[in-house]
Length: 248
Image 1: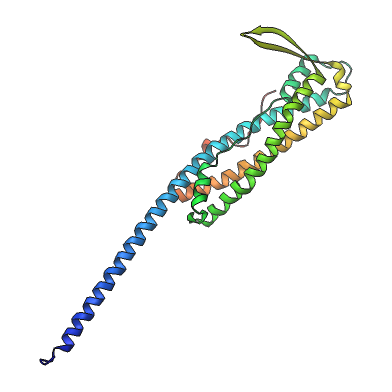
Image 2 (image 1 turned 45 degrees about the horizontal axis):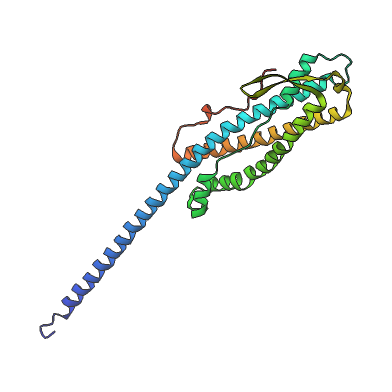
């Protein structure tokens, strides 16, 4: 201070403080960058898993919709013979077996639940986040409640249908498993109770098809957004579309 060096010392001190602050800011920025990089890597990983599960489910929805469509055609076929005096018994048997087609409704949700448990806000794309919550917290549970209830109730109804409409007999036992011969009774085509069963089965299958079609469309919208976010070529070309026509 006696040599009038106070100003120089203050400049050095101020410079060191600035360097320390800059170092801290750089360290924070690098740390934030690394955290963002980790968060993005986790997000991409989970979105890829959701996408893979969604592809499997979309293909499955299309498959079981075909079964529901075939069952509905069985109902329509039987309706065409209702009230007739001499129905073709072979056709009745074919349509009765078609009408009693069953299916199980299942879907994957492990990847969605995993990312949801860590915070759904970790998905940065607002549109994807909204469609995911709509799909997994609303659409799929509602479809599950209806279709599972429908399939559980229909198990007993299908047996009732067979015993009311048909004569069932064992024609052969192969490896301890009975082979059943099912023949529709011509008189069943004038029974009001049978008409009620046919109409009920047709209505339930039609409702299942409608719900599955809505799920397929929602899945496709979500897959398009996921493909764009993940920079993946369009996968929809490999997924069966709404071509549920089945042969009689």
